[in-house]
Image 1 (cartoon, rainbow, N blue to C red):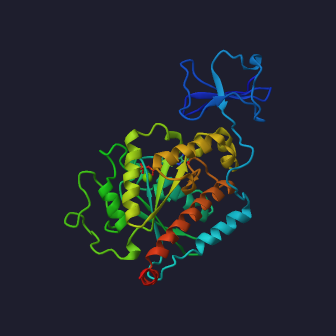
Image 2: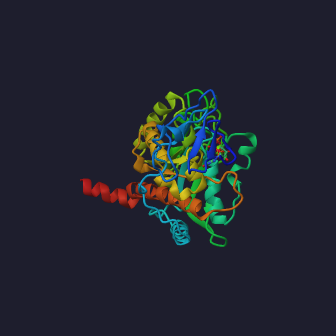
Image 3: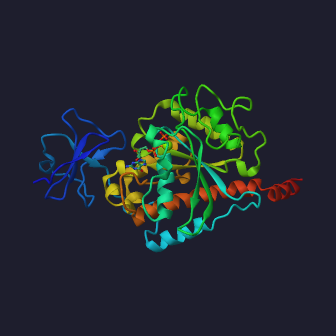
Length: 355
Ligand SMILES: Nc1nc2c(ncn2[C@@H]2O[C@H](COP(=O)(O)OP(=O)(O)OP(=O)(O)O)[C@@H](O)[C@H]2O)c(=O)[nH]1
Ligand SMILES: [Mg+2]
């Protein structure tokens, strides 16, 4: 006996749970294999199925290999207390540099990778309810096109945090469309005015861009870059994207700006994590996709954190909040490295020590 099937949108396969404890994904007759990881039939308790009679089914079936690792590969504290302490840390965060009131964090990634959703999700956590402010004026027209900065506000009555998340147009996957390398670097250097509408035919320039910031000060610049990639597309992104990421990383590193990455849509690659996000670091599938994201971006997995954005949910969930807030905390650590390197008093000290 199988429980009613559920459609899995990413692969067009169906999931069902049998009375013998097997969770199986059934591919359509024209077998669709998931694009990542090896697949093998397993029980919910993770033991492999060896008896062929148990596996005899009319159509090809699989669950993702070793859905659950023996122990999580990163430790997380999934509690209300942890959520509260992360919110306090983020609310009280101030850049370690007097002339910069807020850390400007730029989100970069292919179209639909979840940049605006991440900003909305973080705002939602602090608002105490799911809201979609970052999507206004962007998602209604399909894609984000402007440079839009969002002040992250603390809980009600607490005012601004020291954090600004900057949303941009999706970057070019093929070098032809979307945000160009030139425009991205102009944003990072602080030349691009708030609200600037990007157009691949009209590169940002001192002569053509209205409101172009000729001499950006430290507070106008971007202090950390966050790459955003979609876990469910990691193996289907065009080949050129990896080259674009690596080029970008080199140029951004030359400007002294640190980079981290968010792996979104983790709920769409692992059923277990979709059901319960606390399993994210116990999922072999997600561990595998993290490795692939690291290769795509040309960075170590230690810079990458998985997130599940609020997309269709109406209510907040403490575990989703902890994962989102941990991502913000991770980002702020790398923004701080920028201030340590670039704050004028630290720079003078560094120069004196170097002499
Ligand atoms: N299931 C799920 N859906 C997500 C997640 N993050 C984003 N989405 C959905 O993915 C779609 C694209 O998200 P956006 O936030 O608009 O992506 P974007 O990177 O801002 O896209 P552009 O502005 O077009 O470059 C939306 O339908 C979101 O609801 C996630 O973690 N899980
Ligand atoms: Mg967007």
